[in-house]
Image (cartoon, rainbow, N blue to C red; front, side):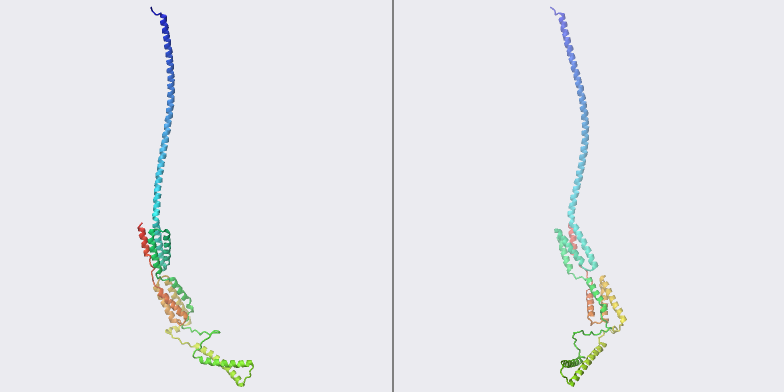
Length: 368
């Protein structure tokens, strides 16, 4: 028996409805999926844009970081170079300190040598060597000990060297210049000095007899005077003898004074050069002035270290003293002796050179 048609139609209708429902559900799902895909695509685009912007920022940051790193590396390299230069400079300073000290010492010694050559004395060189020794002692470096020993040797050698002291010689010449006007000339007679009160003068042989008689007469007169004062009676002979004794004492005093004046009128002197006695008073002034000029020329020659010229002027000055001045006077003899000593000491003596010190400095500088 066959299936009824309405059953088949109902079945077909049910199937069609189910198919429609299923298609509609499927369409809804597809639409939902499309919406989800669109939404995700939009979010993916946004994320991609953000990723691109972040990548761009990261790239910019990377470039900036690279630039900063390069700058830092450059600064580090520059600092390293500067540190190396600083270390090299410090080492150079440490090495060159001794060379600087040696150079300063050498320059100071050479300047002192020039000053000693100009002044003619060893004092500048001695003072400089002392200062050099003190300076080297403060450094206390083994390589400088050789130089210090050489300085000590040269200092001792220069101290013991005999060098002409021009300052002392000029002072002695000035002393003679000062007393030229006081030196007695042979042509100017000098009166004998009168004895002072209380001074005992020994009588000479020519007046010994007169002095003895006058003393005896004065003794008799004093005895008679004492008797008269005491009131003792005197005989006429005693009075006459006392009066005569006083008169004799007065006469003897007068004759003694007259004899002294007469002795001063005549003076016996040995004259080797007769022309010395012929110097007139107005010529004596020019004689003393010429002697002063000789001494001034000798002084200038000593200061300019022309010792031969100084000795010539001193010799002429001594000849003038011996020829025209009284050599028996103490001042004349002292002046002549002073000029003789000055002429004997006025000679060219070179100041010793500190060759050992200079050689030690050159050796120490070359041995760096």
